[in-house]
Image (cartoon, rainbow, N blue to C red; front, top):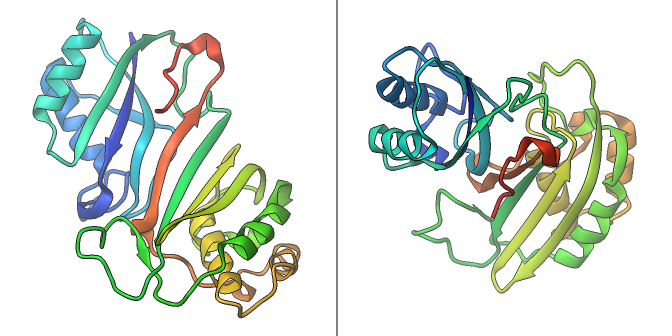
Length: 253
């Protein structure tokens, strides 16, 4: 049988999602916990791999097992065997045609910036501290030029292994709430470091170093070296994965 889970985790202590030869990935801790409940080896598939230090509140995974457990049994059993920085949010038994990665129609990320003169002790691993003033309105204006389907090579990491850089950005916004600037981005799929590279480029515009129109020049150049810095990983969170309704996957809160 196939089981789907919603997962949240603080990525601070992990070498990204994927199981590692050197270091610990979130996947390894989750598979160990699942194996303890199933009493058999378990291999999971996730909706989207996250990098070292990146967090998730809406990650989705699936696995196949011969173990017969209720949804409640999986939820309580797995969470009992997980470390405090990883938690299962929900469990659903699904049809065999559901695939956490390939059935997904969209993914959403949130990037958090703390924009004030003083750094934060409490949020040091959850937000990018930028002490220079940022103009969120210019950042939002610039971001709207990225909407639609484009070749996002200019916002792609050198080590990205995706076969194509074509992606469709369905929504992007930059909003301020006091000292906090929140960048929300949704697309059909993302390239390696794509959100972090977009955010770093928007920050360059927000600091007044480039006009909003510059981001279109960067996009059309397809040259990563022309854009802004790569924003640090700890400000990024995978918040939602979208699926067709027939799969019965809960919407992210």
